[in-house]
Amino acid sequence: MIGTEMLETSRESSPATDEAIEERRGCLFALSQPPLMIFLAVIGCLLLMAAVHDLFVL
Image (cartoon, rainbow, N blue to C red; front, side):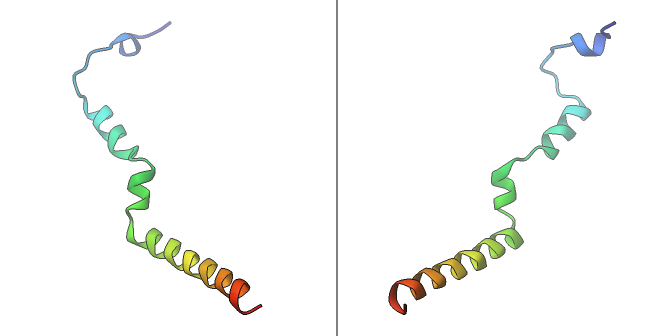
């Protein structure tokens, strides 16, 4: 049987929903982290150097 907690659709914030919102921050929050951005910048520079090498040296 469905309990009353499943049927409640009120807009009041509860501690459980506040914690769930904090856990689901999404992709933009992940991209704002410095270690990830440093890693992506290094990979991007390596790809750029490889492309420049292929275009101008080979």
